[in-house]
Structure formats: structure tokens, C-alpha cells
Length: 496
Image 1 (tube, rainbow, N blue to C red):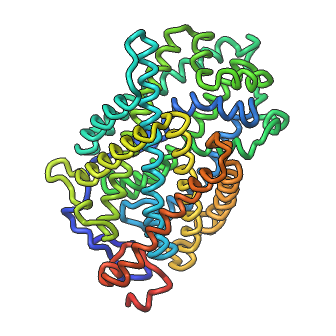
Image 2 (cartoon, one colour; image 1 turned 45 degrees about the vertical axis):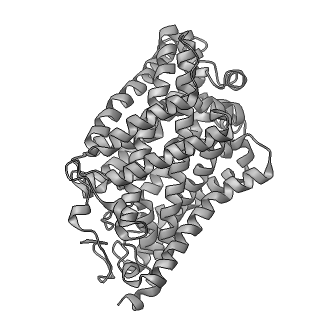
Image 3 (cartoon, rainbow, N blue to C red; image 1 turned 135 degrees about the vertical axis):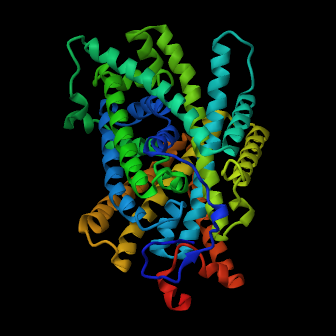
């Protein structure tokens, strides 16, 4: 029987039969691979010149450091609450446990929308990158959507199988993409940067940090940490959840933050903190490859371009697994058809949920092709920006729920873990959300107010749909409503 443990409301349980539980033997390292793969480190570093061109140039390494610190503080309350939440629903179960069933249901659908939006955007980016890579090799031009479709087929196979197989594939791909960035960074370091006289710490000085809109820069850097919550999503498949999840969470945030900071620092040093912004404007799409050619050789630039495709592939594998487990968890609590919560008899995977995610991905791909949208300038840029707003909203809701949960249950009385850290993180996250909304046209690259408004409101609409589903369940299926994992402290008397 799944429950919040221990809880001030012992009547609240979830109808999770053991047969519907996922299983696996993931350790902290494997889960970290899942999280970091979703973050797509090579893709983030390759796209960091966008931040250099639009924000504070040579101060971009500080932006990643600042975003990492905000999430590290967020992780304090998140991991503390994770000790008391035994369902693998991640953010939405945290939100529901703190803020009630209706808001929790809204958060569930908000998460589904956000991750599906980001996944379909990455599929388009992958198809675009693979098509360009093939063309650069002198082979005939191929439509981008064919490569996207091929990736969907392979991801569908991996998603249908046990999670351990996906973890192994992700591990190999992740090591390769990190390796090329490490080689490039070491080359810049050993050659002494742009002057040859040694690298400097200019990127972390006030003058460079404040040379452009640092707030917008931190907001853009925050996007590089997407996938953070998947540590808790894989709870059922973790070897020792109460130890594995916190370790994986801290390791992922610290590892991603340090890697991004050091890698972008070396990228800045390769050209100089004063000159990198103008160079990034001219080479926004290929600055990493240009740096690789300059400091190592053409072979490394080719490796970067190739591994950029595999980085995106690893990313969609991870997102597919995350969305499948969201559907599995939501189906298990009764907010979606329970068929989604079934597990494969041999692989112990959420195979029906995985099939649904594949079908949705194919349907969206057909839609983008029918609309004639450009894979990079429209599908990736517009849809991922909308998904990013949804992800930030989830972080904000989770921070609030941590404070409310411990204030109500008194399960942990440590001020730093349950009040101070969550509130500090909440302030930072709200600032990032405000910056994302006020600078949304810069994110999408389109000045059309109507389109930008629709993209901003789409995550809100998904939240309202989820909340509406819970209200419908409360009216039509009260027994299911009462058995939802997350409980509404405003209706405890009704539950008892």
C-alpha cells in the first residue's frame, strides 16, 4: 500500500497494487546518468554562446554557477521532503502532499505538458542536427523529420524494456559527450587561453558579470538543469530509495553545476572575456566547433558535431522515461486510465505508458511537418520555451509545498531544511520565472505578442485541466478522490 510515511493523516493511501509497481536496480550513479542525460550537457555547452551573445558575454560561467546554487538550495527542502513521500510521482506528489489534491492534480498535468513539449522540441532539434551532419559528410540531403522518426523508434524500443537497459545506453553516450568537452577544456587550459599566458578569473569579477543583463543570463542558464526532478521519479526502480534519491539529487545538481561552470569558463577563456561576446554573435551555432578546431583540430570539431546528435538522443531517451513514469504514476492514482499504470510482466517497465508517449511523439511530429514549421526556429525554439515556463512553475509550486507540508505535519523541525532553504530557493525561482515571462520574446525569437501569450499561457491551461480532472473525480468518483496519494489538508475532516 503506497502512502505518505509517516503522515499526520493515516487515512490517506493510494491504491497501488504491488503488481503495478515498477522495478529495477538503479543505484545513485545510474540515476545521476538519467538526470544529466536529460540535461544534455554537450547540447547546453554548444548552446551557451546564445547566452554569451544576448546577456553578459564573458560572465556566462557565473550565470551557471548562480543557477546551480539556487537549485542546490532548492534540493535541501526537496530531499528532506522526499524522505516522507514514498510514491514515484516526483514534483506533482510533492505539490499535492503540501498544497492538496486539486493543486497536485494541476501540477501533474503541468508536468506532463512541460516534459512532452520539451521532448518534442528536442526531437526536432535532433532531426535537424542529424540531417545537417549527414549533409556535411557529403551524403545526399535527407528531411529532418526522418531522423526524428528513426530516433522515436529506437527510444520506443528502449522505453518498452527494463529501465536498466536505458541506463546503460545513457551511461555510454553521456561519457562520450562529457569526454569531448573535457578534452577541449584541458586544451584551452594547457595552452593558456586566448593570450597564451594562462587563464584568468575575469568571468567571476563584478565588472564582467554585470556587463550585461545578468538576470536574463541566469534564467537562460537555469534551462540547462532541466530533468532535475527525475531523481525522485525513478524511486520505485532505485536500489535503496531513501539513500539513493538524496545522493543522486545532490550529486546531479553539484555535478551539472560544476561541469557547466568550468566548461563555459574555458570556452570564454579561449577567446577572452572582452572579445567572446562579439565572437559569439557571429558564431552562435558553432562556437564550440570553432574552438575545437582552433585549439585541438578538425577531428575534435567533427566529434563535437557527431556527439551533439547523440547528446540529443540521450536526452530524448531520458525524457521518454520520465514522461512514461509520470503517466504510470498518474494512472495508478486514478487521474488517468488505469491501463497506463500496468507494468510488463517480464521487463517490469511501464510499457503501456511508454507506447502512449511514443504515439504522442509521432502525432506531434506529424503536426509540425503538416504545419511546415522549421525544426529549429519554430518547433525547438517556440515549444521548448513554453515547456521551460512550465518547468519553472513546477519548481515554484514545489518550494511552496515543502514549507506548507512541514508546517502542517511537523515531521521535521529543522529550520534550515524545512523553512529557510525552501523560502530562499522560492525567492530565486520566482525571480527566474518573472525574468522568463518578461523576456519571453527574447527566448522565442518572435515579437508576435499573440503567439507569445499563447505559449506562456499553455502551461497554465495544462495546470487548470489537471485541477479540473481532480474536481471531476471528487464529484463523480469520491472513493478514488479520497484514495489519492496526495492529500488536501483543507478536507481532512471529510477524509476521516
